[in-house]
Amino acid sequence: MKQRRALALAAGWAAAPLAQAHVKWFAPYIVEAPPRRILHTLADPWFWTGIVLVLVFFLATRAVERTRLGEAILGAFDKATGPLWARGDDFMRFVTAAFFVAIFAVGGVYLTPDLKSPHEWVSWMQLLIAGLVFSRRTMPLAAAGIIGLWLLALTQYELFHLLDYLALGVGVAAYLVLAASDKPEWHRYRFIVLRWGVAIALMWSSLEKFAYPDWFHPLVEEKPFLTFGMPRDVFIPMAGVAEFTMGFGLLWTALIRRLSALALFVIFNMAVYPFGRLDLVGHALIMAVIVIIFADPTPQVRFAIRRTLAAIPATLVATMAAFAMGYWGLHHALYGTDGRSGIASATPDPAAQRSTHTHDPERPHAAPAAATPRAPDGGHAGRAAPPPPSTATAQPASGDTAQAAYLASMQRMHGAMEEGVKHPDPDQAFVRGMIAHHRAALEMAEIQLRHGADAEQRRMAEEIIATQKREIAEMEDWLQRKGAGRS
Image 1 (spheres, rainbow, N blue to C red):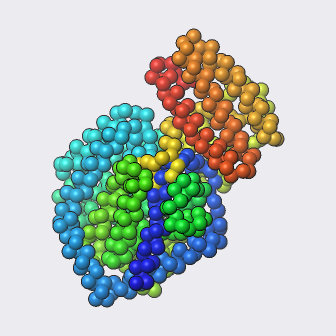
Image 2: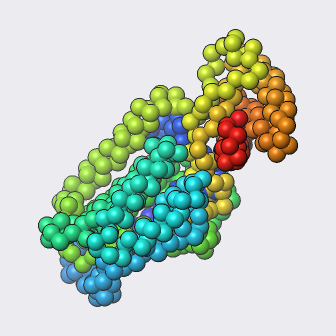
Image 3: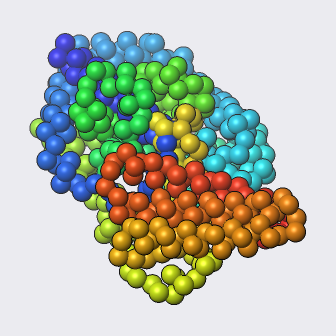
């Protein structure tokens, strides 16, 4: 009973894998912003409470696994999933094809409804991938297409934002290659790469709840039932622990692996009703892999973590430490100690202050799509969609005060808007004037993030940045399609 209660509680916290996607899909967020320091998490008693409860579940489950009760539970699982496991390859190929047909129907996205694409031909490429999945001869081409879609998304989105998608994408692509192979020594690893791909994706994305807990605030405020009555600041760290450890559990022994998969499957399905069918589309592949992991009757799968009971705590802590060092270390390498949220340097720049039409290229702010108004995961639901490709945005005027920066920004906007609306074509005049207006809104939001302190207004500024960047990209794309170049 103890391990069942622990599993149920962990499953409740793990409702956050949804949050991951949903926050990405429902609300804008800035991945370049500096993450919360890891010391904040280590000082949070609810983080350690989650760790202790999960360890109780793991240790109890491992102990039961060695008994006749554990054998009986695994035997019941085998009996229930035997027919599915016998057709496991057919199941994975069907779901993979159905997933790509679904995102073809959604249109304008890459590998998930979270990643918007301005290219119509990308959707037809997805339909082609779906067709290639049904023949063993063409499955490697489908795998290449999946990797190609990720590389295309990389041209528009940040590498850091796309790493969790990479783990799952590589897992599915590798499965297609290995499943098509005639070599038994390759073929037998096909489900193993799927399991590792999902596990790594879950563990990596769970760290967002520790690095950027404020991304999830709009979700739990909009849908408070997700917290099961727990306070927001209690639920989010414990949900992060649950998501990480459920992913970690997929790499463990048979009973831990299958119970973790079962809990994850229930949690993902629970998201479909409150977040809609688009959420099901966004999570279809990961849910299919979780089903296969649960159905796998192998007592000790290859490349599982085979550890004694006493080694479970040390292995879990070591894995969390390794992922945390990778997450925070890579962010530091890409964006520096203070991060980069699209905010220009505050160092005075007289030349910029004198200019009335100075624009500097800026990296796009990744706005999700996994699992709030950050747009989880298919609709990642209800939030603002991530902005498409990066656009040029005016450099915020430097100054010692926010007032000086705001005033200089307005002066540049007036000159740029006047120049834009002078265009002889009324449509282009509108678009060029609005681009200048939106760039000014971006500047004001960036200045607010640099100087402001109010949490509500900072969140508003981040939303403005994501929304205005998306609209600027759409207008710039319209100018390009008209052969007018970029503004």
